[in-house]
Amino acid sequence: MESRGYAVLKAKEPLQPFTFARRELRPNDVAFDISYAGICHSDIHQAREEWGPAIFPMVPGHEIVGVVTAIGSSASKFAVGDRIGVGVFIDSCRTCANCLSGQQQYCENGMTGTYNGYERDGVTVAQGGYSNNFVIDQDYAVKIPGNLDFSGVAPLLCAGITLYSPLRHWGAGPGKKVGIIGLGGLGHMGVKFAAAMGAEVTVFSHSASKEADAKRMGAAHFVVTKDPKVFAEQAESFDLILNTVSAELDIDQYLGLLKLNGTLVVIGLPGKPYAVPAFTLLRLRRSLAGSMIGGMPEIQEMLEFCSEKNIVSDVEVIKADYINAAYERTVASDVKYRFVIDAGTF
Ligand code: NAP
Ligand code: ZN
Ligand code: ZN
Image (cartoon, rainbow, N blue to C red):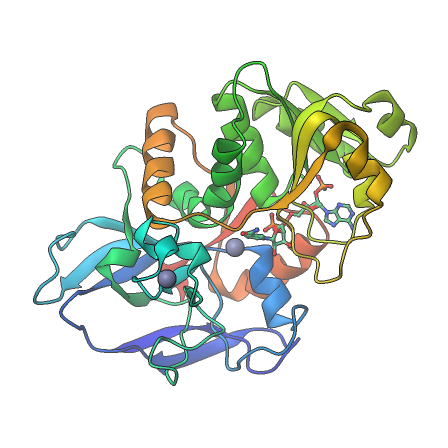
């Protein structure tokens, strides 16, 4: 199947129009026309090889929604015309304990990423969602509730689930003080979800201009981190803090904000290690943890939660020829709060 999209041909180069082939339908596959694809900061990290060597040409994109156009001979989960979504992985081993418990993102044999990796045959390079169509095994795609704005749904497939999963795992809810560091694509979903779950939400941001938006999304408090005295003012008061910052950060300052048994979850992936003093962790029995996206059942659960609470991402819909400018603006923290590509423009 021919596909038209945008690709990075060499690390750090701008994206450009690119035509490539996708596989013909296997029995358990569905094909769909992509409607929207979100731009995640992980796309930028990989296009620029900030996490190490990558595979080129690379068609990024792992926040994908579209409309089903064909179904394989034994596929029955979707019908032609259904709204469908695909996130950060397209396959996994399906047999390990983590796959069997629906936590495919933690597959013991490694999940198959949506792009910048090989499919399970070990030779086919997977290509992502900055394109006009897609083919996926139905077990790795989700159904999109009918009441949600479609462009705003695309970012839920990565940014949304990546914040929903740790908020659920660490029990965000009434009586809990939750901090979100960074109000970007991931962070703004964290604010919406944590507020909808009933937690008291504080945003830690290095952009003072985002305060009104953070409060509109449900934050009770907004702290500008440029002034170091805020860390003393907020010390030892949080149950849970989620760090979504894409750049390096003094993690010790934020660990100091946790109260007894509090947890700081690393979500942002700057590429370099954090420096963590043992004393800060020992004092108040604090935990430093990590969390990666979410599994297939939890993505579907999150979409039902969004449908019930009417939650989508705040998006700026762009044309394909604006992708490179959108990358620059994202890196400059000038995103409100997710760029989403209209796939009709590829
Ligand atoms: P994004 O939209 O660019 O948001 C990142 C935010 O971090 C910015 O909006 C900004 O918020 C803050 N920030 C950026 N540079 C900063 C700096 N130098 N100092 C302090 N704060 C800074 O990125 P995203 O798409 O949300 O992704 C965030 C990170 O999560 C990326 O590293 C991405 O690769 C990673 N990620 C992880 C997972 C996972 O499964 N764990 C999944 C997806 C993405 P303020 O302006 O409010 O300060
Ligand atoms: Zn992502
Ligand atoms: Zn597995």
